[in-house]
Structure formats: structure tokens, C-alpha cells
Length: 231
Ligand SMILES: Nc1ncnc2c1ncn2[C@@H]1O[C@H](COP(=O)(O)OP(=O)(O)O)[C@@H](O)[C@H]1O
Ligand SMILES: [Mg+2]
Picture 1 (cartoon, rainbow, N blue to C red):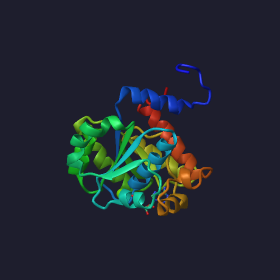
Picture 2: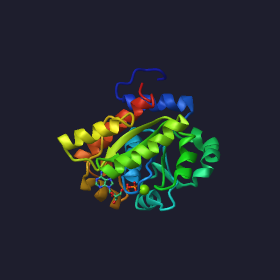
Picture 3: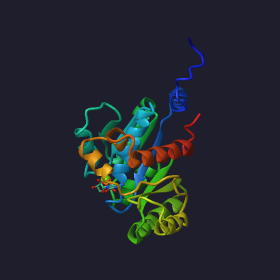
Picture 4: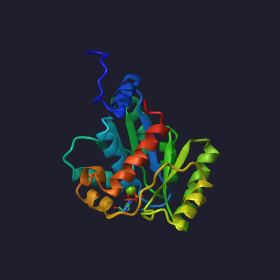
């Protein structure tokens, strides 16, 4: 019955429905000037987790390397929707397809600030993916300056982190905090991410009870809150 209280529906389903009614997908690119930081892995895993929460998710691969396309080709599931797109074609694609999705995550190449700018300018929030290393921190500082100069919203998420909150990780989180807002939650270095990718899965499909899946769920919680997609 319409309007009937249904305790089986999770708050995420309700959020998804509200979003459908608003007809406006959130656009979130994952970037860094440095390759290998974990951008494609974060995109595929958050994409799967949002799909599990009943959101209609598109993953756009703007990296000529095509990691997401390779990942999708190893998958059977229909969702999340994955396609490759040139960054300069994103505004046009969004004008046609944005209404069909609740969340659009964009994977980007490293070393291509022009492509990054084309994507960031249409984003609701850009996530700079970094690591607990001096090189990743330096690359993040470089990218973040471009966002500050352009007045575009961004936040930082760490990948490949130590599995426990060591003093070293705390120090790197503090160092990144000097550069901007840090996501609630980070992804540790865990073989689950590699084993899941090999099978075209997200870690929450591959080993739902594993630590990696919990980290992805926590990060997804944060992202949904940050994008005001919670009910
Ligand atoms: N959290 C993680 N733990 C372990 N390995 C990871 C993790 N994230 C990514 N990887 C691995 O690191 C490599 C680079 O990750 P990838 O997502 O392709 O980075 P990028 O897209 O930034 O170049 C891949 O082999 C991937 O499987
Ligand atoms: Mg990549």
C-alpha cells in the first residue's frame, strides 16, 4: 500500500528513492596526478557497494588505460553500469544520461591535469586518492592546489594504508589533513582488493565479511553523508 510504513526497507533504499524523485545524480571523480595510488580500485569497490545499497550507479572510465573496462569485462552482473568516455565528452553525456542514475563515479588517468580539470568542473565533489607515502602526499598537495585555485570542492581518501592505526598512519593522516578534508575511513593494503579485481568483483561481493569489505562500507557511508544522500 502506498505510504505504508515498511520496516524492511533500509534507510539507504529510502535515500535512493528520494534521489530518484529528485532525478539528479551526484558526480564524483576520483583523481590524483600519480598513477597506481588506487583510483580505479576505489571506484569499482564503491560502485559495487552503492549498487548493493540499491542506488543506480554509473562508473565512467576516462582513463585510456581502461582499467574499469577490463574489470567490467570480467563481470557477469549488470550493475554498476560501466562505460568508457573521453573526459571532454562528459558534460554532453551527463546532459543526456544523468537522470538515469543516482551516483556517477568517474575514474581518471594520472598525469593528465587537463582531463582532470574537465571532469572536476562538473563534479559535486572530487575525491583525491592518496597513500601514506611522501610521493603520494606531494602529488596530492599539487592536485589540491589546483582545486583551491579553481574553487572546486574536494576531499582526500587514503588507500594502501597500514591495516591498523599505527603512529605512522596517524602521522600521514595528519599530514594529509593539512591539505584538506579527509574522508571518514580509508582502505588498507589488502589482497582482497586484488583478488576481487581479478574476478571482476568488488570486495563486498567477493568476501562480504572481510576487513576490506568493512572498509569500503565505512567509506561509502561517509561519501553518502557527505553528498547528503542519507535520509
Ligand atoms: N587497497 C589496496 N590493497 C592492495 N592492493 C591494492 C589496493 N588498491 C589497489 N591495489 C592494487 O594496486 C594496483 C594499482 O591500483 P589501481 O586502482 O589500478 O590504481 P590507479 O587507478 O590509481 O592507477 C593494482 O594492482 C591494484 O589491484
Ligand atoms: Mg586507474
